Amino acid sequence: MMANWGNCRICSENPFTVLFGWKQPEKKCAATERKCKPSKRNEKDFKPRSEEEVKEAVAKWSEYVHARARDFFAGTQQLEEVLAQLAKGTDKDCDPVAGSETQCVYWYGDVTKDECQAAIRMVKPGEMQESVTYVNRVLAFMFATDESFEKLMALPKEPFRMNCGDQLCVHLAHISLATC
Ligand SMILES: [Zn+2]
Image (cartoon, rainbow, N blue to C red; front, side, top):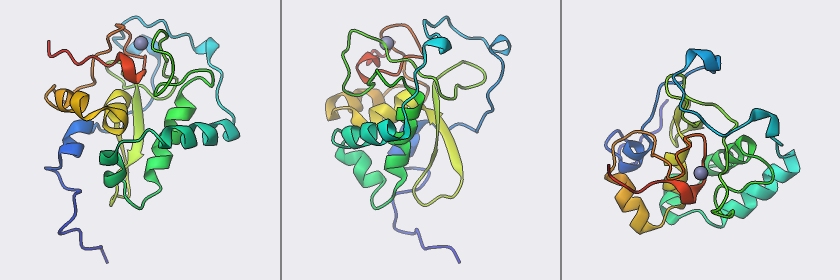
């Protein structure tokens, strides 16, 4: 028996859903198969967080989460699960939310098959299956100020461009608000 979602916010017209730019799940593939733009990311440099460090990062970033994301994920564990994925996909010495803006924060998690964009899997509230979306769109949704968020919502439903020119950077402060 399905729950009655008749009055819920989780529908296809939902601006949050539009913002995320949902993708079909894609499997990781060899770098040679992709048309990747050059990135300074070096997988050998990756120092993953321990389980304890993931929890610490989730607790820290939870304090920065915007009310729009809290409402979207209301009463679910999914918000923390997404934050945990962010923690697992970035280096333990890097902070994509509150870290210094002078350094890029590279993504070591999933990337999309065709364009090598940083991607994240998440289960939307009210759904059972994972969806794949772009990390920088999720970051903006969760942490951007209202002013930045409004500008970003007006951009195409694609991965946001990064000011630093590196699409495998997921620093919130490096997301470009430029429209062209
Ligand atoms: Zn960057």
